[in-house]
Image 1 (cartoon, rainbow over the protein chains, first blue to last red):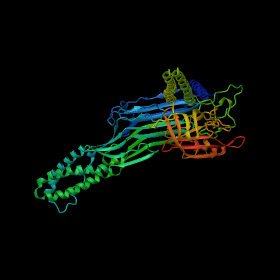
Image 2 (spheres, rainbow over the protein chains, first blue to last red; image 1 turned 45 degrees about the horizontal axis):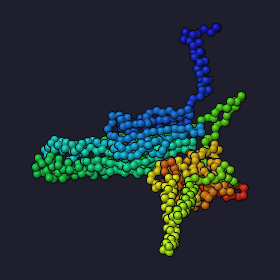
Image 3 (spheres, each protein chain N blue to C red; image 1 turned 30 degrees about the vertical axis):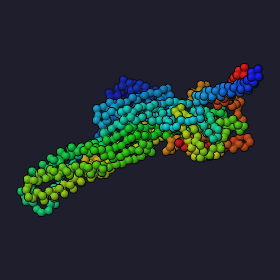
Length: 434
Length: 206
């Protein structure tokens, strides 16, 4: 039976599909022959990145790559704080992020530097180690503790009171006293809003990578973490200037919990005494019992702040291969435990992140040969010297020791001088004789 | 005339004395003036006084000095060959700094410098094998200032031993609290035909 194209698969459609398939085969067969540019050096630099509630804001990472034909860049290497957009965590300061690549002996190399300094700081060139010199200190608001979320009266303040209360008094406490108490405490908590601040002169990282190596370092000049409680600075941490790689720092807020407790208890006493005054003779007895209950509740509420809530890594170094490295001067994270405790905004601050490498090597120049033979893979670039032939039996003629101009000149001058002095003395002597 | 001759005679001795003193005074004046000129010339040409090291940034070396061994040599960058051989500069008066090693003043890595020892004399590092820990500091002049190093170790190793320990001896992942270590290398152990070993001087940055 002769083949008849069905209505679902008409002849024209078959022809179009055939042409399409043939074209695809031609394209596929051409792909291996096309030579895509290969990156042989690359680096990135990010001055500052802040992630608030999962949304990152950064200084627009500067990225450079080199495929052997020249350096291409993306982003800016002249960042300003304005790049961070409409934010309130950083006012002023000098951001640095720069990177560069070069090709030496057909091998790629890369350098990068990134960080943040206060106003008045100055910038150096990338590739010369650290690139920031500190000026005044900059302050990053690393997060806020929203104490208004504390619920001091969450549990029943009347629980475990010694002696039964009559129904009327209980009702009066619930309807009149506690609402006033709650209002007073709420106001006090809102006024106590705490800011955790990062104070720094300059925080920066730098790296360099080439064939077989990737190295970097970080420097934190005059950097500290502190909290302000009722206008008073309470230092939590003072960072070392030259931390070793991956230095962990963890801190809690126990230094500030005492201050918060003190302020709240003062408010509690005032509110409680005012609210209970209307109850007459039973007020004094009730005050002591209620006060004890409420203080216990307060301490329970603040307890999580005494656990580790701030987690930082200084000079964070990650090596993904022998010829690459990522260095972050300061990586500070507020642990989620703090969020559960008192509405601490989950926040992540990264200052000075530099990455260098991985790199590569340009393939050898193609040799014009009549019959192309498969060329062996280029030998990997040596990492360190394995032989240093530094001895000679005789000095080559060309290298005969030449007189040192700067060593002989003073001797020649003194010799000439003595001759001149002698001559002058003789002339003077003869003249005087005449 | 006696008085005249007398005065002439005494004037003759006095005159000779005056002339002698005049001549000496002139000599001294010329010497004093000349010493001032020589002093000025020396200071312009660069004396041996090194400026105090204040936080000198990392930079390529340009001169090596080991005062107690009389070593003073120009430093030029050199490159590693594809087969991992580090050849010093052809001119034995000049030493070479491996340009993939750390720059003096860097925080990490090692500053690797090598130069020739010549059996008949005339090599920049002929006397390096005499260097021992505890001597005067080794000085490296760089494009940014002066770096000083205190010798901590002297190693003599055969070529096979050097190859086996190459990463440890010259690797750039090293990190020391004081900054990049200086590694000076030349040859030693002349056997009548060739040098059998390398002498390697390790020095920490001051």
